[in-house]
Amino acid sequence: MTFSEVSGKLGLPMRSLMRWSSNDGGWRKEAGPELERQVQEKANALATQKAERDAELTEQAHELAVDLRVGVIDRHRKELQAIRGLLVEAIQSRDISKARFAKTAAQTLEIVQRSERKSWGLDAVEASTEQTCIVIERY
Image (cartoon, rainbow, N blue to C red; front, top):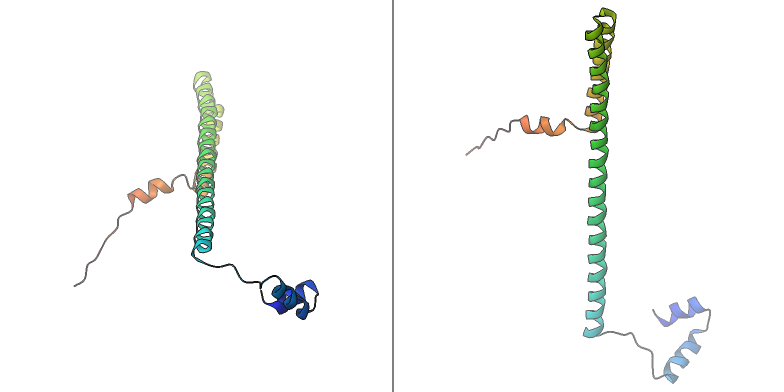
């Protein structure tokens, strides 16, 4: 900071600041290789800490995404077990209306689960492995 900046910030006359500076042997800005080295070490430490925090947050976000998708798949399996129970009951009782209900429920569940799998991106991995990449080299 210059004398005028300090003067404006503190509300003191610049002449007083200059007099005080000369009485103290002159005020100077700290500089030098040792100071620069310390600044660089501190800046590197801060950058390393930030990178570690970012990596940790990224890992936590990944784990949360995996856990949420596992929950969706688990719920889908439980829902399918309920449909299977309806179907077994219809077969054992030989009741056609229960069989129709089980079929309708299964179709409805299939539509809901397909939409949910699409919205959660659960089938994206399977689709990406089946894609073909063609490379055309021109000379």
